[in-house]
Amino acid sequence: MGVEIIPDRRVSSRREVDDNTERMSAGNPEADHILGGGFPSNSINIIMGHPGSGKTIFAEQLIFHNASDDRPILYFTTLSEPLEKVVRYLQGFGFFDETKLGTQVIYEDVGPQLAKEGAGALIPLLHAAIKTLSPKVIVIDSFKAVHDLAPSAAERRRMVYEMTALLTAYGTTAFLLGEYTEEDILLYPEFAVADGIVELSRRRLGNRDERYFRVYKLRGSRYLEGAHAFRITSSGLDVYPRLVSPRMPEGYEPATERISTGIQGLDEMLDGGLWRGTTTLLAGPSGAGKTTIGLQFALEGARCGEPTLYMNFQENPTQLIRTIRALGGDPEQAQAHGLDLVYASPVELQIDSIIVDMFRRIQQRGVRRLVIDALGDLASAATDPQRLHDYLYALVQHFAVSTITSVLNFETTGNTIAGHGMQNAMSYLSDNVVLLTVDGEERTRRKLRVLKTRGSAHDSRVREFAISAAGVSILE
Amino acid sequence: MQDQHPDSRVILIAERSQSVRDLQSYFLNQAGFTVEFVDDGEAALERALAIRPLLVVTEILIPKIDGLALSRRLQENPATRDIPVLVFSILAAGARASEAGAKLFLRKPLVESVFLSAVQQLIAAHPIGALEEQWASK
Image 1 (cartoon, one colour):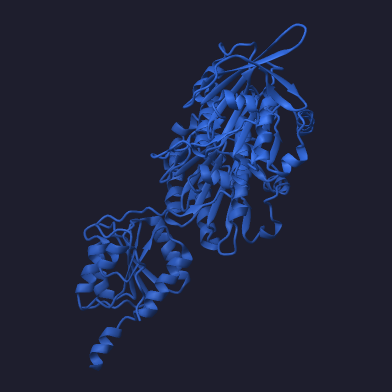
Image 2 (cartoon, helix red, strand yellow):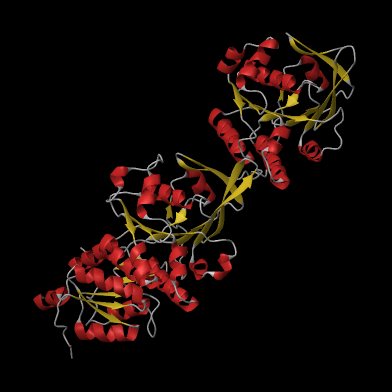
Protein backbone atom coordinates (compact mmCIF):
# COMPACT_ATOMS: atom_id res chain seq x y z
CA MET A 1 0.00 0.00 0.00
CA GLY A 2 1.40 3.35 -1.07
CA VAL A 3 1.64 6.56 0.85
CA GLU A 4 -1.28 8.84 0.11
CA ILE A 5 -0.75 12.27 -1.22
CA ILE A 6 -1.69 14.93 1.27
CA PRO A 7 -5.01 16.09 -0.17
CA ASP A 8 -5.34 19.66 -1.20
CA ARG A 9 -9.00 20.08 -2.08
CA ARG A 10 -9.10 23.83 -1.99
CA VAL A 11 -8.55 24.73 -5.61
CA SER A 12 -8.15 22.58 -8.69
CA SER A 13 -7.01 25.36 -11.00
CA ARG A 14 -3.39 26.04 -11.82
CA ARG A 15 -2.92 28.45 -8.97
CA GLU A 16 -3.78 27.04 -5.59
CA VAL A 17 -4.79 29.55 -2.98
CA ASP A 18 -3.07 29.54 0.36
CA ASP A 19 -5.82 30.79 2.63
CA ASN A 20 -5.40 28.78 5.77
CA THR A 21 -2.30 30.22 7.37
CA GLU A 22 -1.73 28.58 10.72
CA ARG A 23 -1.57 31.03 13.58
CA MET A 24 0.37 31.19 16.79
CA SER A 25 -1.45 32.69 19.74
CA ALA A 26 0.21 35.57 21.54
CA GLY A 27 -1.04 33.98 24.77
CA ASN A 28 -3.42 36.87 25.11
CA PRO A 29 -6.95 36.69 23.60
CA GLU A 30 -7.23 40.45 23.10
CA ALA A 31 -3.85 40.68 21.37
CA ASP A 32 -4.85 37.72 19.19
CA HIS A 33 -8.05 39.56 18.29
CA ILE A 34 -6.02 42.59 17.20
CA LEU A 35 -3.61 40.35 15.26
CA GLY A 36 -6.42 38.71 13.32
CA GLY A 37 -6.05 35.43 15.20
CA GLY A 38 -2.41 35.54 16.25
CA PHE A 39 0.97 35.64 14.50
CA PRO A 40 1.27 33.58 11.30
CA SER A 41 3.22 30.41 12.09
CA ASN A 42 6.70 30.18 10.57
CA SER A 43 6.99 33.94 10.33
CA ILE A 44 9.63 36.45 11.40
CA ASN A 45 8.27 39.18 13.67
CA ILE A 46 9.74 42.27 15.26
CA ILE A 47 8.51 43.45 18.64
CA MET A 48 9.76 47.02 18.99
CA GLY A 49 9.59 49.60 21.72
CA HIS A 50 11.58 51.68 24.14
CA PRO A 51 13.10 50.15 27.27
CA GLY A 52 10.32 49.43 29.74
CA SER A 53 7.61 49.31 27.10
CA GLY A 54 6.73 45.67 27.82
CA LYS A 55 8.44 43.81 24.96
CA THR A 56 10.04 41.13 27.08
CA ILE A 57 6.86 40.54 29.08
CA PHE A 58 4.84 40.24 25.87
CA ALA A 59 7.33 37.71 24.45
CA GLU A 60 7.45 35.72 27.67
CA GLN A 61 3.68 35.58 27.94
CA LEU A 62 3.65 34.22 24.38
CA ILE A 63 6.31 31.59 24.92
CA PHE A 64 4.92 30.19 28.16
CA HIS A 65 1.48 29.98 26.55
CA ASN A 66 2.85 28.06 23.55
CA ALA A 67 5.30 25.86 25.44
CA SER A 68 4.55 22.16 25.05
CA ASP A 69 6.33 18.83 24.99
CA ASP A 70 6.56 18.43 21.21
CA ARG A 71 9.19 21.04 20.36
CA PRO A 72 10.84 23.49 22.73
CA ILE A 73 10.93 27.26 22.64
CA LEU A 74 14.32 28.91 22.54
CA TYR A 75 14.93 32.30 24.12
CA PHE A 76 18.26 33.89 23.27
CA THR A 77 19.25 36.74 25.54
CA THR A 78 21.92 38.83 23.90
CA LEU A 79 23.63 41.96 25.05
CA SER A 80 20.73 43.91 26.48
CA GLU A 81 20.03 42.07 29.72
CA PRO A 82 21.84 39.20 31.42
CA LEU A 83 19.85 35.97 31.62
CA GLU A 84 19.68 36.03 35.44
CA LYS A 85 17.96 39.38 35.34
CA VAL A 86 15.42 38.29 32.74
CA VAL A 87 14.46 35.15 34.69
CA ARG A 88 14.45 36.86 38.08
CA TYR A 89 11.73 39.33 37.10
CA LEU A 90 9.85 36.75 35.07
CA GLN A 91 8.95 34.89 38.24
CA GLY A 92 6.59 37.64 39.35
CA PHE A 93 4.13 36.92 36.55
CA GLY A 94 1.19 34.57 36.67
CA PHE A 95 2.05 32.93 33.34
CA PHE A 96 5.51 31.82 34.57
CA ASP A 97 5.77 28.06 35.02
CA GLU A 98 9.00 26.86 36.50
CA THR A 99 8.35 23.26 35.43
CA LYS A 100 8.66 24.30 31.78
CA LEU A 101 12.10 25.85 32.22
CA GLY A 102 14.92 23.88 30.70
CA THR A 103 12.65 21.46 28.86
CA GLN A 104 9.83 23.29 27.09
CA VAL A 105 11.32 26.76 27.41
CA ILE A 106 15.08 27.02 27.03
CA TYR A 107 16.87 30.25 27.85
CA GLU A 108 20.36 30.70 26.45
CA ASP A 109 22.61 33.64 27.16
CA VAL A 110 24.58 34.19 23.95
CA GLY A 111 25.77 37.65 24.98
CA PRO A 112 29.33 36.65 25.91
CA GLN A 113 29.89 34.79 22.63
CA LEU A 114 28.47 37.65 20.57
CA ALA A 115 30.60 40.16 22.48
CA LYS A 116 33.68 38.09 21.75
CA GLU A 117 33.05 37.05 18.15
CA GLY A 118 30.77 39.78 16.84
CA ALA A 119 27.34 39.81 15.23
CA GLY A 120 28.29 37.14 12.71
CA ALA A 121 28.39 34.57 15.52
CA LEU A 122 24.61 34.65 15.69
CA ILE A 123 24.16 32.60 12.51
CA PRO A 124 26.19 29.53 13.60
CA LEU A 125 24.51 29.80 17.01
CA LEU A 126 21.10 29.64 15.33
CA HIS A 127 22.21 26.78 13.07
CA ALA A 128 23.41 24.78 16.03
CA ALA A 129 20.26 25.48 18.04
CA ILE A 130 17.98 24.43 15.18
CA LYS A 131 19.88 21.21 14.61
CA THR A 132 20.07 20.21 18.24
CA LEU A 133 16.80 21.56 19.70
CA SER A 134 14.34 21.84 16.75
CA PRO A 135 12.73 24.88 18.37
CA LYS A 136 9.23 25.84 17.24
CA VAL A 137 9.72 29.41 18.48
CA ILE A 138 12.94 31.41 18.63
CA VAL A 139 13.08 34.71 20.52
CA ILE A 140 16.13 36.96 20.21
CA ASP A 141 16.13 39.60 22.95
CA SER A 142 17.51 42.02 21.92
CA PHE A 143 18.13 41.64 18.20
CA LYS A 144 18.92 45.31 17.87
CA ALA A 145 21.82 44.81 20.25
CA VAL A 146 23.20 42.10 17.93
CA HIS A 147 22.61 44.30 14.94
CA ASP A 148 24.54 47.16 16.54
CA LEU A 149 27.57 44.89 16.98
CA ALA A 150 28.08 44.58 13.23
CA PRO A 151 30.97 46.81 12.12
CA SER A 152 29.41 48.04 8.87
CA ALA A 153 26.12 48.39 7.07
CA ALA A 154 27.22 45.69 4.64
CA GLU A 155 27.93 43.30 7.52
CA ARG A 156 24.55 44.05 9.06
CA ARG A 157 22.77 43.34 5.79
CA ARG A 158 24.68 40.10 5.31
CA MET A 159 23.88 38.95 8.83
CA VAL A 160 20.17 39.78 8.41
CA TYR A 161 20.09 38.06 5.01
CA GLU A 162 21.68 34.87 6.34
CA MET A 163 19.45 34.83 9.38
CA THR A 164 16.34 35.33 7.26
CA ALA A 165 17.35 32.57 4.85
CA LEU A 166 17.84 30.17 7.75
CA LEU A 167 14.66 31.13 9.61
CA THR A 168 12.65 30.91 6.38
CA ALA A 169 14.04 27.49 5.49
CA TYR A 170 13.27 26.05 8.88
CA GLY A 171 9.77 25.72 10.33
CA THR A 172 9.99 28.08 13.26
CA THR A 173 8.31 31.30 14.33
CA ALA A 174 10.83 33.97 15.24
CA PHE A 175 10.45 37.07 17.39
CA LEU A 176 13.16 39.71 17.23
CA LEU A 177 12.87 42.14 20.12
CA GLY A 178 14.52 45.52 20.01
CA GLU A 179 14.58 49.08 21.30
CA TYR A 180 13.77 50.39 17.85
CA THR A 181 12.11 53.69 17.09
CA GLU A 182 9.69 54.47 14.28
CA GLU A 183 12.53 56.04 12.29
CA ASP A 184 14.48 52.76 12.44
CA ILE A 185 11.80 51.06 10.33
CA LEU A 186 13.19 52.77 7.25
CA LEU A 187 16.83 52.27 8.17
CA TYR A 188 17.23 48.74 9.54
CA PRO A 189 17.14 45.86 7.04
CA GLU A 190 15.35 43.51 9.45
CA PHE A 191 12.17 45.54 9.01
CA ALA A 192 12.13 44.80 5.28
CA VAL A 193 12.24 41.05 5.83
CA ALA A 194 9.89 40.93 8.82
CA ASP A 195 6.46 39.40 8.28
CA GLY A 196 5.08 41.15 11.34
CA ILE A 197 5.95 44.34 13.20
CA VAL A 198 4.34 45.18 16.54
CA GLU A 199 5.16 48.30 18.51
CA LEU A 200 4.66 48.76 22.23
CA SER A 201 4.80 52.38 23.27
CA ARG A 202 4.41 54.41 26.42
CA ARG A 203 3.27 57.99 26.83
CA ARG A 204 3.52 59.90 30.07
CA LEU A 205 0.29 61.64 31.05
CA GLY A 206 0.41 63.55 34.32
CA ASN A 207 0.94 61.03 37.09
CA ARG A 208 0.14 58.02 34.98
CA ASP A 209 1.40 56.36 31.83
CA GLU A 210 -0.60 55.40 28.82
CA ARG A 211 0.63 52.34 26.97
CA TYR A 212 -0.29 51.40 23.43
CA PHE A 213 -0.04 48.26 21.29
CA ARG A 214 0.10 48.87 17.55
CA VAL A 215 0.53 46.50 14.61
CA TYR A 216 2.55 48.12 11.85
CA LYS A 217 2.59 45.16 9.52
CA LEU A 218 1.36 41.58 9.55
CA ARG A 219 1.59 39.80 6.24
CA GLY A 220 -1.43 37.75 5.23
CA SER A 221 -3.53 39.00 8.14
CA ARG A 222 -6.52 41.21 8.65
CA TYR A 223 -5.39 42.97 11.78
CA LEU A 224 -7.02 45.83 13.68
CA GLU A 225 -5.24 49.04 12.81
CA GLY A 226 -4.54 51.85 15.22
CA ALA A 227 -3.31 52.20 18.79
CA HIS A 228 -4.80 49.79 21.32
CA ALA A 229 -4.32 50.58 24.99
CA PHE A 230 -2.78 48.10 27.38
CA ARG A 231 -1.67 47.80 30.98
CA ILE A 232 0.99 45.63 32.52
CA THR A 233 -0.40 43.51 35.32
CA SER A 234 0.79 40.44 37.17
CA SER A 235 -0.90 38.39 34.41
CA GLY A 236 1.19 40.05 31.71
CA LEU A 237 -0.20 42.49 29.17
CA ASP A 238 -3.85 43.39 29.60
CA VAL A 239 -4.76 44.67 26.12
CA TYR A 240 -7.88 46.65 25.24
CA PRO A 241 -8.67 46.44 21.53
CA ARG A 242 -9.83 49.77 20.13
CA LEU A 243 -13.60 49.90 19.77
CA VAL A 244 -14.62 50.12 16.14
CA SER A 245 -18.10 50.67 14.76
CA PRO A 246 -20.02 47.48 14.15
CA ARG A 247 -21.01 46.59 10.64
CA MET A 248 -24.66 47.54 10.27
CA PRO A 249 -26.71 44.66 8.88
CA GLU A 250 -28.14 45.69 5.50
CA GLY A 251 -31.68 44.91 6.49
CA TYR A 252 -31.25 46.58 9.84
CA GLU A 253 -34.62 47.50 11.36
CA PRO A 254 -34.90 49.50 14.55
CA ALA A 255 -36.90 47.91 17.36
CA THR A 256 -40.56 48.95 17.51
CA GLU A 257 -41.10 48.44 21.22
CA ARG A 258 -41.32 51.31 23.67
CA ILE A 259 -39.89 51.02 27.15
CA SER A 260 -40.59 53.08 30.23
CA THR A 261 -38.07 55.54 31.64
CA GLY A 262 -39.42 54.71 35.09
CA ILE A 263 -40.95 58.21 35.27
CA GLN A 264 -44.58 58.23 34.23
CA GLY A 265 -44.76 61.91 33.31
CA LEU A 266 -41.60 61.67 31.22
CA ASP A 267 -42.95 58.64 29.38
CA GLU A 268 -46.02 60.69 28.51
CA MET A 269 -43.84 63.53 27.22
CA LEU A 270 -42.01 60.99 25.07
CA ASP A 271 -45.25 59.75 23.53
CA GLY A 272 -45.18 56.50 25.48
CA GLY A 273 -41.55 56.01 26.52
CA LEU A 274 -38.24 55.47 24.72
CA TRP A 275 -37.93 53.28 21.65
CA ARG A 276 -35.92 50.24 22.61
CA GLY A 277 -32.35 50.45 21.28
CA THR A 278 -32.22 54.24 21.22
CA THR A 279 -29.66 56.50 22.86
CA THR A 280 -30.80 59.44 24.98
CA LEU A 281 -28.57 62.34 25.91
CA LEU A 282 -29.54 63.68 29.32
CA ALA A 283 -27.82 67.06 29.60
CA GLY A 284 -27.86 69.56 32.43
CA PRO A 285 -25.79 71.36 35.03
CA SER A 286 -24.63 69.95 38.34
CA GLY A 287 -27.56 69.32 40.70
CA ALA A 288 -30.17 69.28 37.93
CA GLY A 289 -31.12 65.65 38.58
CA LYS A 290 -29.22 63.69 35.88
CA THR A 291 -28.03 60.94 38.20
CA THR A 292 -31.48 60.66 39.77
CA ILE A 293 -33.26 60.31 36.41
CA GLY A 294 -30.56 57.92 35.20
CA LEU A 295 -30.98 55.78 38.33
CA GLN A 296 -34.76 55.84 37.95
CA PHE A 297 -34.34 54.53 34.40
CA ALA A 298 -31.96 51.82 35.66
CA LEU A 299 -34.27 50.83 38.55
CA GLU A 300 -37.16 50.49 36.11
CA GLY A 301 -34.99 48.10 34.09
CA ALA A 302 -34.34 45.98 37.16
CA ARG A 303 -38.05 46.09 38.04
CA CYS A 304 -38.81 44.64 34.59
CA GLY A 305 -36.09 41.99 35.05
CA GLU A 306 -33.88 43.50 32.32
CA PRO A 307 -30.12 43.18 32.88
CA THR A 308 -29.10 46.80 33.47
CA LEU A 309 -25.66 48.38 33.72
CA TYR A 310 -25.03 51.66 35.51
CA MET A 311 -21.51 52.92 34.72
CA ASN A 312 -20.56 55.64 37.14
CA PHE A 313 -17.44 57.74 37.36
CA GLN A 314 -18.28 60.00 40.27
CA GLU A 315 -20.05 58.08 43.02
CA ASN A 316 -18.88 54.73 44.26
CA PRO A 317 -21.43 51.91 44.70
CA THR A 318 -21.94 52.75 48.40
CA GLN A 319 -22.89 56.31 47.54
CA LEU A 320 -25.13 55.14 44.73
CA ILE A 321 -26.89 52.66 47.00
CA ARG A 322 -27.61 55.51 49.42
CA THR A 323 -29.06 57.56 46.54
CA ILE A 324 -31.24 54.63 45.45
CA ARG A 325 -32.61 54.32 48.99
CA ALA A 326 -33.33 58.06 49.05
CA LEU A 327 -35.43 57.56 45.94
CA GLY A 328 -37.46 54.90 47.71
CA GLY A 329 -35.72 52.07 45.86
CA ASP A 330 -34.43 48.78 47.26
CA PRO A 331 -30.84 48.46 45.98
CA GLU A 332 -30.39 44.84 47.08
CA GLN A 333 -33.56 43.78 45.33
CA ALA A 334 -32.65 45.79 42.23
CA GLN A 335 -29.22 44.17 42.10
CA ALA A 336 -30.78 40.74 42.54
CA HIS A 337 -33.01 41.53 39.58
CA GLY A 338 -30.18 42.45 37.25
CA LEU A 339 -28.89 45.92 38.19
CA ASP A 340 -25.10 46.11 37.96
CA LEU A 341 -23.62 49.23 39.58
CA VAL A 342 -20.10 49.80 38.36
CA TYR A 343 -17.73 52.49 39.53
CA ALA A 344 -14.60 53.31 37.56
CA SER A 345 -12.13 56.06 38.28
CA PRO A 346 -11.50 58.05 35.12
CA VAL A 347 -8.33 59.42 36.66
CA GLU A 348 -6.71 56.02 36.92
CA LEU A 349 -7.90 54.47 33.71
CA GLN A 350 -7.69 54.96 29.99
CA ILE A 351 -10.91 55.26 28.04
CA ASP A 352 -10.01 52.02 26.25
CA SER A 353 -9.97 49.94 29.41
CA ILE A 354 -13.26 51.47 30.60
CA ILE A 355 -14.97 50.75 27.29
CA VAL A 356 -13.61 47.21 27.05
CA ASP A 357 -14.74 46.49 30.61
CA MET A 358 -18.18 47.90 29.77
CA PHE A 359 -18.50 45.69 26.71
CA ARG A 360 -17.37 42.61 28.59
CA ARG A 361 -20.14 43.23 31.10
CA ILE A 362 -22.67 43.91 28.35
CA GLN A 363 -21.82 40.65 26.64
CA GLN A 364 -21.51 38.53 29.76
CA ARG A 365 -24.80 39.70 31.24
CA GLY A 366 -26.83 40.36 28.08
CA VAL A 367 -27.40 43.95 29.16
CA ARG A 368 -30.59 45.58 27.82
CA ARG A 369 -30.37 48.99 29.53
CA LEU A 370 -27.37 51.10 30.23
CA VAL A 371 -26.58 54.42 31.87
CA ILE A 372 -23.25 56.22 31.56
CA ASP A 373 -22.86 58.84 34.28
CA ALA A 374 -21.29 60.91 32.93
CA LEU A 375 -19.81 61.44 29.48
CA GLY A 376 -17.63 64.31 30.68
CA ASP A 377 -15.77 61.91 32.98
CA LEU A 378 -15.24 59.56 30.10
CA ALA A 379 -13.84 62.51 28.17
CA SER A 380 -11.30 63.14 30.92
CA ALA A 381 -10.09 59.56 30.48
CA ALA A 382 -9.46 60.22 26.80
CA THR A 383 -6.41 62.25 25.90
CA ASP A 384 -7.26 62.52 22.25
CA PRO A 385 -10.54 64.28 21.26
CA GLN A 386 -10.72 62.40 17.96
CA ARG A 387 -10.29 59.11 19.79
CA LEU A 388 -13.13 60.09 22.15
CA HIS A 389 -15.41 61.03 19.28
CA ASP A 390 -14.68 57.78 17.45
CA TYR A 391 -15.37 55.83 20.63
CA LEU A 392 -18.67 57.55 21.32
CA TYR A 393 -19.81 57.07 17.75
CA ALA A 394 -18.89 53.39 17.83
CA LEU A 395 -20.60 53.00 21.23
CA VAL A 396 -23.89 54.40 20.00
CA GLN A 397 -23.74 52.19 16.90
CA HIS A 398 -23.10 49.11 19.02
CA PHE A 399 -26.04 49.95 21.25
CA ALA A 400 -28.33 50.41 18.25
CA VAL A 401 -27.32 47.10 16.64
CA SER A 402 -27.66 45.24 19.95
CA THR A 403 -30.94 47.08 20.81
CA ILE A 404 -29.51 48.27 24.10
CA THR A 405 -31.42 51.31 25.35
CA SER A 406 -28.95 53.80 26.76
CA VAL A 407 -29.02 57.04 28.70
CA LEU A 408 -25.87 59.14 28.55
CA ASN A 409 -25.58 61.85 31.17
CA PHE A 410 -23.66 64.99 30.30
CA GLU A 411 -22.88 67.85 32.63
CA THR A 412 -23.28 71.32 31.14
CA THR A 413 -21.79 74.47 32.62
CA GLY A 414 -25.15 76.27 32.63
CA ASN A 415 -28.77 75.81 31.72
CA THR A 416 -28.03 75.66 28.05
CA ILE A 417 -27.02 72.92 25.67
CA ALA A 418 -25.14 75.13 23.24
CA GLY A 419 -21.43 75.73 23.33
CA HIS A 420 -20.06 72.29 24.19
CA GLY A 421 -18.22 70.70 21.29
CA MET A 422 -18.68 67.19 22.60
CA GLN A 423 -22.29 67.86 23.54
CA ASN A 424 -23.05 69.10 20.05
CA ALA A 425 -21.52 65.95 18.64
CA MET A 426 -23.50 63.82 21.08
CA SER A 427 -26.74 65.66 20.27
CA TYR A 428 -26.16 64.70 16.68
CA LEU A 429 -25.38 61.07 17.53
CA SER A 430 -28.20 60.62 20.05
CA ASP A 431 -31.74 59.67 19.10
CA ASN A 432 -33.24 61.70 21.92
CA VAL A 433 -32.07 64.78 23.80
CA VAL A 434 -33.50 65.85 27.15
CA LEU A 435 -32.25 69.09 28.69
CA LEU A 436 -32.44 69.63 32.46
CA THR A 437 -32.15 73.02 34.10
CA VAL A 438 -31.99 74.16 37.67
CA ASP A 439 -32.73 77.61 39.11
CA GLY A 440 -34.67 79.39 41.81
CA GLU A 441 -33.64 81.49 44.75
CA GLU A 442 -35.97 80.57 47.60
CA ARG A 443 -36.35 77.00 46.48
CA THR A 444 -34.64 74.92 43.87
CA ARG A 445 -36.73 74.51 40.76
CA ARG A 446 -35.72 71.71 38.44
CA LYS A 447 -37.13 71.62 34.95
CA LEU A 448 -36.78 69.43 31.92
CA ARG A 449 -37.50 69.76 28.27
CA VAL A 450 -37.47 67.13 25.53
CA LEU A 451 -35.50 68.80 22.74
CA LYS A 452 -35.45 65.95 20.27
CA THR A 453 -36.85 62.49 19.75
CA ARG A 454 -36.05 60.51 16.65
CA GLY A 455 -38.99 58.76 15.01
CA SER A 456 -41.49 59.97 17.58
CA ALA A 457 -43.70 62.88 18.52
CA HIS A 458 -42.99 64.51 21.88
CA ASP A 459 -44.23 67.16 24.26
CA SER A 460 -41.71 69.97 23.82
CA ARG A 461 -42.91 72.11 26.73
CA VAL A 462 -40.65 72.96 29.64
CA ARG A 463 -41.90 70.94 32.62
CA GLU A 464 -40.94 71.27 36.26
CA PHE A 465 -40.17 68.08 38.12
CA ALA A 466 -39.64 67.11 41.75
CA ILE A 467 -37.38 64.57 43.42
CA SER A 468 -38.75 62.86 46.52
CA ALA A 469 -38.68 59.55 48.35
CA ALA A 470 -41.16 58.39 45.72
CA GLY A 471 -38.65 59.15 42.96
CA VAL A 472 -38.94 61.69 40.17
CA SER A 473 -42.33 63.13 39.33
CA ILE A 474 -43.25 65.60 36.58
CA LEU A 475 -45.32 68.44 37.99
CA GLU A 476 -48.42 69.82 36.30
CA MET B 1 24.56 2.84 -18.43
CA GLN B 2 23.91 3.18 -14.75
CA ASP B 3 26.48 4.65 -12.50
CA GLN B 4 25.08 2.97 -9.36
CA HIS B 5 25.74 5.03 -6.27
CA PRO B 6 28.07 3.24 -3.91
CA ASP B 7 25.71 3.99 -1.03
CA SER B 8 22.34 2.33 -1.53
CA ARG B 9 20.61 4.75 0.86
CA VAL B 10 20.99 7.83 -1.29
CA ILE B 11 18.30 10.46 -1.64
CA LEU B 12 18.46 12.82 -4.61
CA ILE B 13 17.40 16.39 -3.88
CA ALA B 14 16.75 19.16 -6.40
CA GLU B 15 17.00 22.32 -4.34
CA ARG B 16 18.71 25.68 -4.83
CA SER B 17 18.44 27.27 -1.38
CA GLN B 18 21.64 26.70 0.56
CA SER B 19 19.82 27.08 3.88
CA VAL B 20 17.31 24.41 2.96
CA ARG B 21 20.10 22.17 1.66
CA ASP B 22 22.04 22.52 4.90
CA LEU B 23 19.04 21.46 6.97
CA GLN B 24 18.01 18.60 4.66
CA SER B 25 21.55 17.31 4.54
CA TYR B 26 21.99 17.49 8.31
CA PHE B 27 18.71 15.82 9.26
CA LEU B 28 18.85 13.13 6.56
CA ASN B 29 22.46 12.28 7.40
CA GLN B 30 21.48 12.00 11.04
CA ALA B 31 18.77 9.56 10.01
CA GLY B 32 21.30 7.42 8.14
CA PHE B 33 20.75 8.56 4.56
CA THR B 34 23.21 9.87 2.02
CA VAL B 35 22.19 12.96 0.16
CA GLU B 36 23.07 14.14 -3.30
CA PHE B 37 22.01 17.63 -4.40
CA VAL B 38 21.40 18.96 -7.88
CA ASP B 39 20.62 22.51 -8.97
CA ASP B 40 18.04 21.92 -11.68
CA GLY B 41 15.50 19.52 -13.14
CA GLU B 42 17.67 18.36 -16.02
CA ALA B 43 20.49 17.36 -13.71
CA ALA B 44 17.93 15.64 -11.46
CA LEU B 45 16.64 13.51 -14.37
CA GLU B 46 20.15 12.62 -15.39
CA ARG B 47 21.27 11.67 -11.90
CA ALA B 48 18.08 9.78 -11.13
CA LEU B 49 18.72 7.57 -14.14
CA ALA B 50 22.33 7.15 -13.23
CA ILE B 51 22.20 6.45 -9.50
CA ARG B 52 18.62 5.23 -8.94
CA PRO B 53 18.08 6.95 -5.60
CA LEU B 54 15.66 5.70 -2.95
CA LEU B 55 13.70 8.91 -3.36
CA VAL B 56 13.71 12.18 -5.28
CA VAL B 57 12.89 15.32 -3.29
CA THR B 58 12.27 18.38 -5.41
CA GLU B 59 11.31 22.01 -5.09
CA ILE B 60 8.95 23.15 -7.87
CA LEU B 61 10.88 26.34 -8.51
CA ILE B 62 14.06 24.93 -10.06
CA PRO B 63 15.61 25.86 -13.42
CA LYS B 64 15.47 24.07 -16.79
CA ILE B 65 12.75 21.55 -15.87
CA ASP B 66 10.55 22.56 -12.95
CA GLY B 67 9.82 20.15 -10.10
CA LEU B 68 6.38 19.16 -11.41
CA ALA B 69 7.69 18.44 -14.92
CA LEU B 70 10.53 16.51 -13.33
CA SER B 71 8.03 14.36 -11.47
CA ARG B 72 6.08 13.70 -14.70
CA ARG B 73 9.21 12.82 -16.64
CA LEU B 74 10.35 10.41 -13.93
CA GLN B 75 6.93 8.72 -13.97
CA GLU B 76 6.90 8.46 -17.77
CA ASN B 77 10.25 6.70 -17.99
CA PRO B 78 10.01 2.98 -17.15
CA ALA B 79 13.54 3.13 -15.83
CA THR B 80 12.64 5.68 -13.16
CA ARG B 81 8.89 5.32 -12.61
CA ASP B 82 9.36 3.33 -9.39
CA ILE B 83 11.39 6.10 -7.77
CA PRO B 84 8.98 7.94 -5.49
CA VAL B 85 8.90 11.72 -5.71
CA LEU B 86 8.37 14.07 -2.79
CA VAL B 87 7.55 17.61 -3.87
CA PHE B 88 8.81 19.93 -1.13
CA SER B 89 7.98 23.46 -2.12
CA ILE B 90 7.33 26.97 -0.97
CA LEU B 91 4.27 26.99 -3.28
CA ALA B 92 0.85 25.75 -2.20
CA ALA B 93 0.67 23.10 -4.92
CA GLY B 94 -0.56 19.86 -3.39
CA ALA B 95 -3.11 19.18 -6.13
CA ARG B 96 -0.67 19.92 -8.93
CA ALA B 97 1.99 17.74 -7.34
CA SER B 98 -0.54 14.94 -7.19
CA GLU B 99 -1.47 15.42 -10.85
CA ALA B 100 2.23 15.31 -11.71
CA GLY B 101 2.55 11.88 -10.14
CA ALA B 102 4.34 12.87 -6.94
CA LYS B 103 3.70 10.49 -4.08
CA LEU B 104 3.71 13.21 -1.48
CA PHE B 105 3.60 16.97 -1.22
CA LEU B 106 5.00 18.92 1.70
CA ARG B 107 4.92 22.65 2.08
CA LYS B 108 8.03 24.49 3.22
CA PRO B 109 9.45 25.43 5.67
CA LEU B 110 11.17 22.34 6.89
CA VAL B 111 10.09 20.82 10.15
CA GLU B 112 12.48 18.02 10.99
CA SER B 113 9.97 15.52 12.35
CA VAL B 114 7.45 16.00 9.52
CA PHE B 115 10.09 15.88 6.80
CA LEU B 116 11.87 12.79 8.13
CA SER B 117 8.64 10.97 8.74
CA ALA B 118 7.51 11.65 5.16
CA VAL B 119 10.83 10.49 3.71
CA GLN B 120 10.86 7.30 5.77
CA GLN B 121 7.24 6.49 4.96
CA LEU B 122 7.78 6.97 1.24
CA ILE B 123 10.90 4.85 1.17
CA ALA B 124 9.21 2.09 3.14
CA ALA B 125 6.18 2.12 0.86
CA HIS B 126 8.14 2.28 -2.39
CA PRO B 127 11.22 0.10 -2.17
CA ILE B 128 13.32 0.65 -5.24
CA GLY B 129 13.48 -2.41 -7.46
CA ALA B 130 10.10 -3.67 -6.28
CA LEU B 131 8.58 -3.08 -9.72
CA GLU B 132 11.44 -4.80 -11.49
CA GLU B 133 11.10 -7.78 -9.17
CA GLN B 134 7.37 -7.89 -9.85
CA TRP B 135 7.94 -7.87 -13.60
CA ALA B 136 10.67 -10.48 -13.34
CA SER B 137 8.43 -12.82 -11.37
CA LYS B 138 5.72 -12.70 -14.06
